[in-house]
Image (cartoon, rainbow, N blue to C red):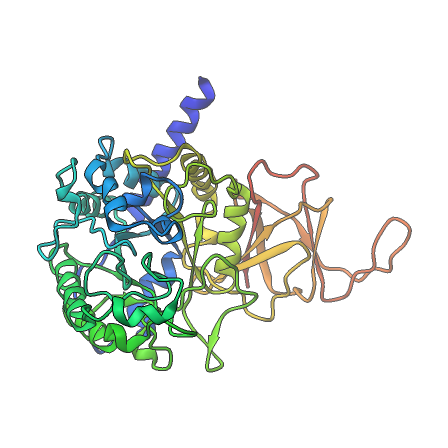
Length: 461
């Protein structure tokens, strides 16, 4: 009981600290700023929360369940007729996100099944026509915004419910014989669907205040029976979004891959790039979207959950390569976070309370700083501080190659306790190792700090 009370107190303390430190700029985007300047909040904040929530939480077998199981509209509509998230409390979600150190949130307004999680006037296939009867999006936006968390919207380009969306290889009604497609699609009109998308995007970008990020998902032009950027009128969507929300940041999944003005960042999904991604040999802003488990939507029987340690290392590694982490949670059909997700968010909260300065405002370290063995480096160019995330705690000493004259002070980040360091040229013996004239040796406590991922903070000269 005592430990629980202490843990609750430090979570409350962390939330208060984060609330005081967060300042969301509500002004409209100044068109004179370049692309990197209008993305500066995003490249500073580094850590976002993805929320995949919809009818697919009821079957609880992956958000693609309608396509994977080739469900008919009639069969899938059972979920709409029963969906009633009676325990939905967006303030609770926002509180947990804030405690975990989340700076922005991206919510699935409409996923591939076509079901809308707001009261859109362009469809009857929406949350207000379920037994729940209420909109969930406006309360969600308000709750997260009240916690100082920026707002992003996910919108699916695919729509397996809309009668004018042409059947393709991802569609639940895709026939085994592709030659039947022409007959199935003869009365479907993508032009009408494009108009529907733009009408809905106009709703989303005019009725919910400032929207900071737009995550469009996705183009699949390669191979047969896919869809390309022209199927969506991708250029028209980008122009519409930038007109309605000039400051908005848009991902690259509309299929417009060549022109940087048509997208702001790239989105590697469910893998970690080996290095900072490039387009045309130029480093670009990037955000990896990752799940706690193997599914985006709530999946009751998914057991490949990442540990708290894995998630923290993932966050640090992403920032060390100049990227953002968008970490996903899939709420249940009753409107609560899975207890496994809560456990991991609590673990992130515990670590971020003491180590957020090694994440916010940080990026890849300059090349002059070699990464020690079993470590990850992040760097804050504004404070000129280098952070060494120690994956495996070494015995007594951490060797830094070619660091002589670069370090003013060293400390453990979790408690700001000093770490002594020295530079010496020494010939090795049976009890010591050879050290070079430009190397620095940091003396470490034998016992590892009691945190998931220890971090050494170097204040540089």
